[in-house]
Length: 282
Image 1: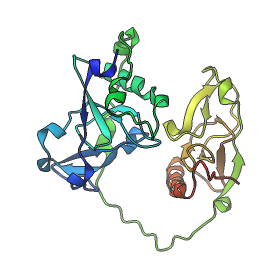
Image 2: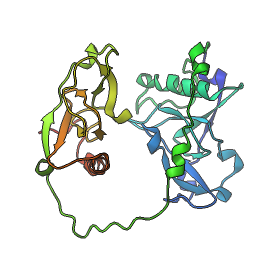
Image 3: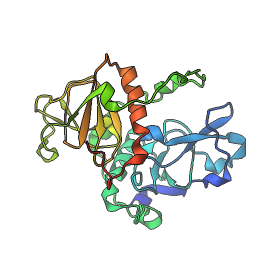
């Protein structure tokens, strides 16, 4: 079944037509952009009274990125109302559809990424022609979805005074022992076992599967991509295996999840120096 048989497709608003605020204020709603992970889709906030009603989409609306080299074709269901930018298409169901079904179709759309590229974007007819399952598996609507908006209650707009006057530059090797990733090859994974398998991905905390192979690396470390999505960094709390495309940063100091997330943020700030053609070697 074609996508446009299930959904009406609407395009977002050109960013230059709006004033984008960096922080949430009373009377504003999130402004959504294209991104390869849902947590990065919020680009800022827009005042509600500056928008036309037809540009505001309700909570649990399904949307898809229609542009970008590494962000195209990713599809998500929003946990809040929003206004999309022009690189995002919103899909409105033509029939009653449960939240479970929307999430299922979002995943189905994302699985079509291999059909598109920066030079062949999923826009217009290309997006509408995506084939989706006509029959919904029984397990979809029987799946219990926990409240995925509860984390929004912990978001605060409080500005934290951070004194950086004593900060100094440092080399990663001065704080970390760095080793090359080890583990089975991705093609050998059979979805059995319980050991996380980390690859050079930019999403899902770098975990792309599980393996029955005993963990090759200890937890409480940081994995940094040297290939693929170069420069992405994720804190790994559990023991894991990985591809050789990962550098494993073993701290020379007592590391905890909070410090781990702090250092992954610093490491990602170096991404602009590297690319697939200029990989992050030793």
